[in-house]
Length: 369
Image 1: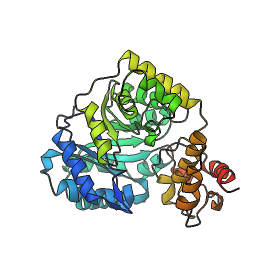
Image 2 (image 1 turned 90 degrees about the horizontal axis):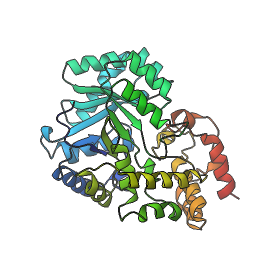
Image 3 (image 1 turned 60 degrees about the vertical axis):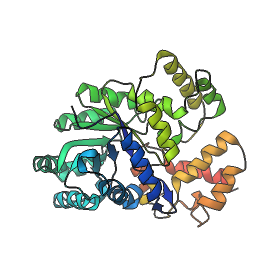
Image 4 (image 1 turned 30 degrees about the horizontal axis):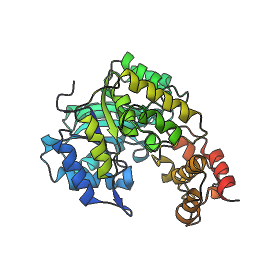
């Protein structure tokens, strides 16, 4: 369907290599060069990623260094950047300017759910993107999605010219009743929409496995935990792209090693994946993917994903390290879990539908004795 897309593996640019608060251009250049040298060409970004620095880094490290026909660039229309119908076109044009391109290969209505979909409808975003496609500023119109399968079915019924759907899809969320990965995938298949997979390693949770989970993979070979997660997602019919948010060159090298000549999981590997899934679901961990959507609107500037990561680390390893990072790194400025004023903005923004206010209270009980 998309002849210019070379392989089924893409570079998600939400978690780039950083030096402090800035993108590490030297390492990002090397990662892009390695990615393209191995035959890959799909890059995914959004205006809010890294507070705008993802788009500018792609301009400086990709667009300014490679001919336009060498790469596929996807960007997104996020609900926080438009409020009226008149805002949509200027915002997209500003993104084209920031990225230094004349068109986006794919442009997605970003993080649609039952609430913000009404805003997209009210502002005629779908219709305007189709107009921009006709003008050549977008090659393909799509959507990314974070909600239940019935909402996805409704949107695809009302917006039949959507060409691709990006969903969260990994083996831990496959049967999860809140994320509904499998059910959303089934809806995409019902509407004959190619699937782009985000969060195949669930924000790193499926990479840094506890020993009792990791042993199931060790028993069948020496491949990385990430390889099983990414290949799991890519093994399904209709999945045309799997995104990986690679943040250093070693992650890039590992991902390329098994996606350059992709082979679906065999029966033995799939059984190991299901065994690992069973172990992980037996643990009481917070299923935060560190997308950081929750932090942008937090009036207390609480680093919610980092505090949840400390909580999970404490649950798995039971050592002093999590306490150190909680107290000396992530809350050094004073924004502790207990400073939450329970405004609820974080829960509205959370793609995982986590009860963040309750979880912050749990975190405070553990780390703020």
